[in-house]
Length: 83
Image (cartoon, rainbow, N blue to C red; front, top):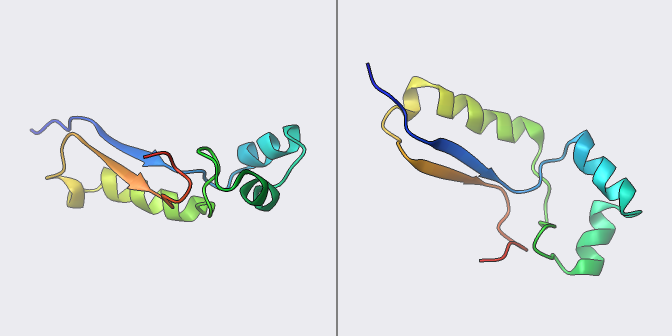
């Protein structure tokens, strides 16, 4: 038996209803925020579709990732993220 240690996903903003609510609370849209804030640290240039995020989750849960241990998978556009 093997034990996986800390496989995780570090995702940029995913296009979900929760993110839409955040933009509504800020009285803006993703496109407007990206333009006005110039890709500030919390606003990536492109939202990740939930389907793409789920593919990474499925892969991490599969036997195919069995040799990956103690790693974070970065998913999404790095544009606008603070290095």
